[in-house]
Length: 54
Image (cartoon, rainbow, N blue to C red):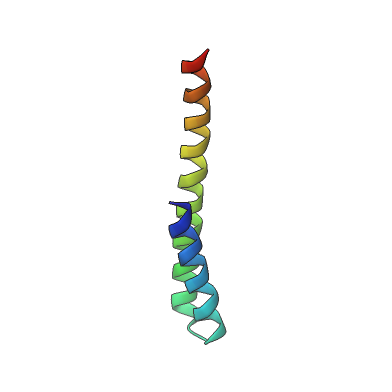
C-alpha cells in the first residue's frame, strides 16, 4: 500500500510540473489517503503483533 502511495505521489509531482493541476491535486489526495491507511494498518499490526507474542 505504501508503494501505491509513492506512485500516486510521483504522478502528482509529474502532473504538477507539466501544469495539470487538477490531476496533480487528485493524485496528491489519493496519495495522502493511502498513506494514512498505511499508517493506521501499520500501527494496528504493531499493537496486535506485540499482544500475541507476550
